[in-house]
Image (cartoon, rainbow, N blue to C red):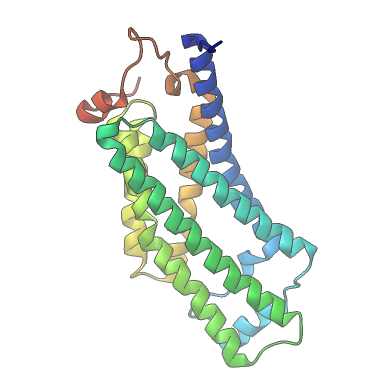
Length: 247
């Protein structure tokens, strides 16, 4: 016999996926920040740092279990970000599915950048703990690390800006949060031409905004999982086209 899925069961299932996405967003922010004491990134020298400081950073790290735990936390956190982005993208109607594709594609590029960034940092720490490298090698590693950070400042807008626009044009998230994210994206691009200290701030703030979005999904999960019945199932397309003031 064919199984009949009721509107209530479908709505409950959708609400469950919203909760998963909310926790994924929160976990991304928490894990990304919590990894820093394990990886020692708080002491990472700027790209303008002296060769002595760069060498001291790498040779002062240990490629031990704590460091590997920090790397794993970053990897898991960024994987969970994709869960959140995929859920938000799925809420869009087919006519605006391209916006969702842009969010997911941009997020995937961001994840790839983080993988390369962590690989460079990890390689430097590994070799520093296993015989060491030449001074020039440390200089190249630090340059590559900051190159990925700069690329992220630009490419991050590929998923951050579309996500912000979705927040502004719908009432599922506070519109103010979307506008703050737009401002953060513009500031992130501008930081490319400013001192490195500025990029540290603009690059770290997205963790806060996505964490807030995840908390909103957890606290107001029913707003993201409406009943699929004809009388109440409202397509986000109408909200996307007209915009709505957040309740």
